[in-house]
Length: 260
Image (cartoon, rainbow, N blue to C red; front, top):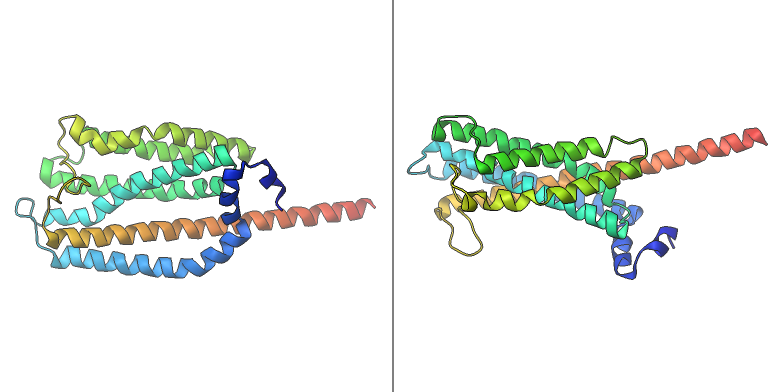
């Protein structure tokens, strides 16, 4: 039994059992090809449907087609940060063996999704608002999210001791969670230029089905692609840690042999 498991509360041991690095490598190796293929197919199908087959908006015209990239990127920007916060909880509370590594690998991918969200939002905003950028509550809170990602990326690498870096990054991730409700409800709390959400859990979608279905397909494809990229990065990080541990063990054995 892993010695670290004895330090974990009983309710957290199940998480450790499923997060064993060797078990993770075996399981992810089987899942990753299917995850990648499904994400690629869904993304290409959704973009093809939305960009070439779906109708233009009666008011925005063809400019609305940028939403098939912008909206999924926005969902992933917030969803990725929520995943980062979950990893932080697993690390701080249960000492999850892969949580810190997962947080490190989620950060750059989430930052990329947020940058894509901001860039496509600027492209969409120019013809609609007449400006690339306005200090709108939604836009500003997403920009803050981007800086939170960058801060986490920098902080986990700012210490010579990786444990201290991971702990500091986890605390920052949890503090930054307060920004997620601001992003979600900013268009409801303040008078903003950004349009309200067209898809809610409490009401019917505010868009035609011909536009909704390709948007949902793009969202599924982007999400699967995000998961595939993070899984591939995490696999590489786990294997790198194993190689470093093996090289360190070999160096120590050689040093002991030389001393003898």
